[in-house]
Length: 229
Image (cartoon, rainbow, N blue to C red):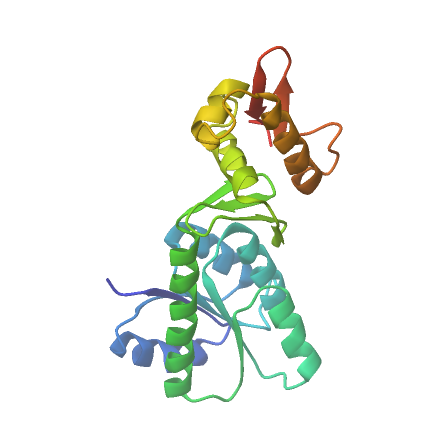
């Protein structure tokens, strides 16, 4: 299936310059001439990548880029006549994947589009096994946990406990159930082992371990993972 591109520029001649070449390269093309239209069409059409001019009526390319990045992981290439390095940094900091300065060759544009699409598809493959819980991202395949993008160092036992709880938010597990499912009977006769591991997990993932939002105690029974994150 052809990748869908949204080309955004307020100059019709620029759109007419890019569209036929990129269509001939095998891309499906939609266009917009204002920042407001770009956001509306992006939400409706869900393009794989946006080629976005910096200077636009109604909303600037920077404002459009920032808003699109909040709602989607689509690729974004900023295009502008600005040559100042500061402008390039601003564009990348608000979420653009690449930045091109006018004038540019269509062959280079196509090459950069394909490069960004490859990176996006790689990120999607990497994120397929990610379990997102509030500010936590848990990868079962890689056995890693991240909070706000930073890796949280958990022991293998702590990881298994957290994964068991996070897989079913709101479900209450007794200490014995956690011993059997997460610890594989290693300490079957000492349920207090679970309490010690939970305490360590909370210190690593909770903003306030004394008032946890992720791993919550159900008094008289066991633990559950918060379901209102």
